[in-house]
View 1 (cartoon, rainbow, N blue to C red):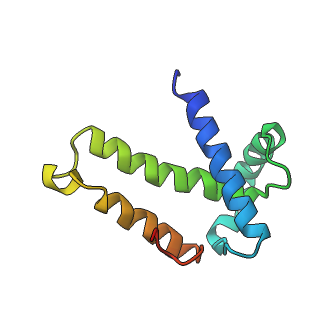
View 2: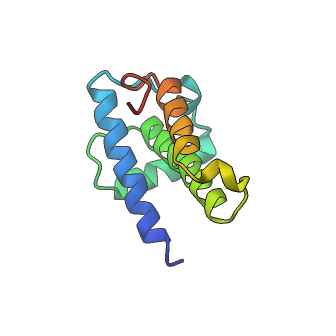
Amino acid sequence: ERTVPLASRVVTFFGLLLGEAERAGQLTVPQAYRQIPPALQGVVDGYLAELPVEGATPATFVLAMLVWSRLNGHVWAELQGHFPPDMTESSELFQIEVTAICQELELGSGSLT
């Protein structure tokens, strides 16, 4: 419960970032994120109405949620010791994931560097 407000701020940030990238033509939102099932569409629309993200699309909101969940999952697994210890001593494993996300979304140069 205590982490929900903080997590919401992170998702809002990702929504702002991805929405701006989409409007600037720097982001390709995959079709899978655009095909929101009817049962989920109402929930997404409800959240969009409450967020301070002007012009956000349902697809970008879903994308932001799932990008956040991938990165959060990586950090959580690292903190809980679910990776072999030597794999997380540097940030290289995390950088691979961020680069993969950028490439999947055709976002920018597809790399952190």
